Length: 215
Image 1 (spheres, helix red, strand yellow):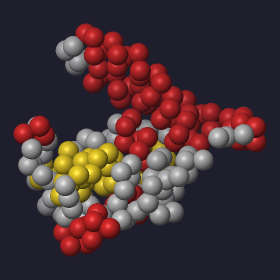
Image 2 (cartoon, rainbow, N blue to C red; image 1 turned 60 degrees about the vertical axis):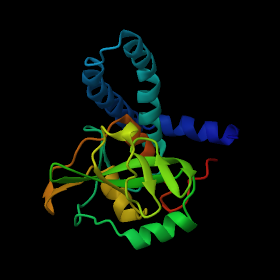
Image 3 (cartoon, rainbow, N blue to C red; image 1 turned 120 degrees about the vertical axis):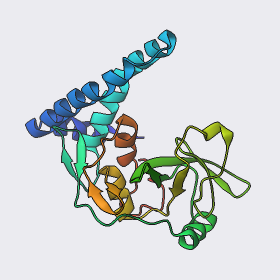
Image 4 (cartoon, rainbow, N blue to C red; image 1 turned 90 degrees about the vertical axis):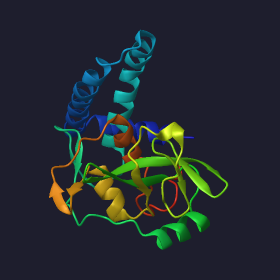
């Protein structure tokens, strides 16, 4: 539980002009980013729920990012993380299997490699289930211990070529920054939504292969 010292520390942080400016810039960017998607929602009831929850998630994301401990350069004006882009990552089945058999735990933030239309991207996701030698990611469905996507009609709408990778700082950095490649050639980064921006602040950066312990 956070005590009076934590509250006082937060209050002091919000007195900083640069912090307040970064928060305001992030909130504006997130609203501008999310509203166009809401306009395409065909279900009125679902649209109402999403509109009602949007302020909460925008505030939460902006606060977590500004007050968080993500060791990456933040571009608050554009609502993104910045880091030098490296080589296109590869799926390594044996290393992946050794990790997911022996070390992975439910609740961990993980990198997922997706290849779609010749373009390779890294995404952030979370492990939310494990059963029968399979891991389930919240957004990208089931994978076996080696990281290969498990065929399931429920996830037929997802890209067929997707791999669960063993977490590393380099992979998590690339996913946070939206790095993309086309046949190993670097492309401009993709824009992360609120969910992935929040996940970036949930990564245990000192040891990305273990869950962050909430204070």
